[in-house]
Amino acid sequence: MVQNILDFFKNLPDKYCTECGKKIDEQSECYGNTCPNCLHVKSHE
Ligand SMILES: [Zn+2]
Image 1: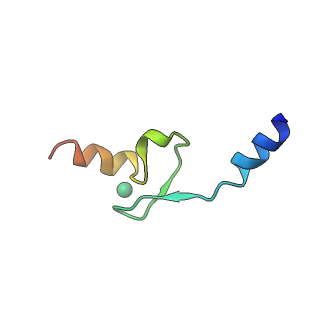
Image 2: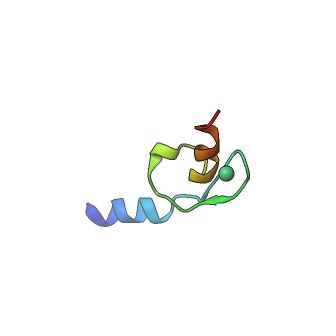
């Protein structure tokens, strides 16, 4: 049921960065709970 899958993703809650609290626009799970910006900053540590 493709329609059910689409509804599932549409109903997903917005994700917010655990570092800065900014809404994460990316749908990819590779960023986890951190926005790309904070992920980039962390990569320098
Ligand atoms: Zn962030």
